[in-house]
Length: 72
Image (tube, rainbow, N blue to C red; front, top):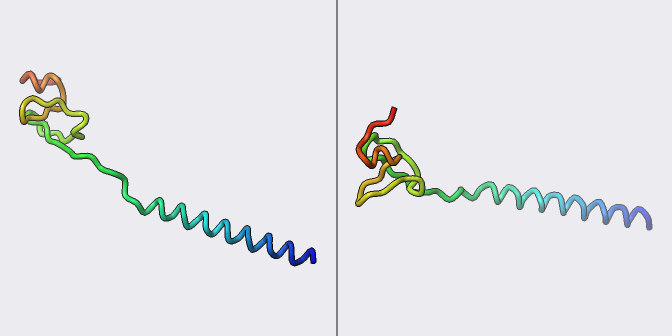
């Protein structure tokens, strides 16, 4: 009887481990959500839209480029 209980616990443990491993590998397959990239109108550097400075239809990488100045 002890052997049957031990065997049942061992099978349940292996099943739980396999199921846990499969769930982790499914999460790794989903691609991360991306963000639109824009190009600075002054220097051409690409940066995420959330980090750019916009003026009209133009996007800039920094305030100096928006003002038309050059950065060192």
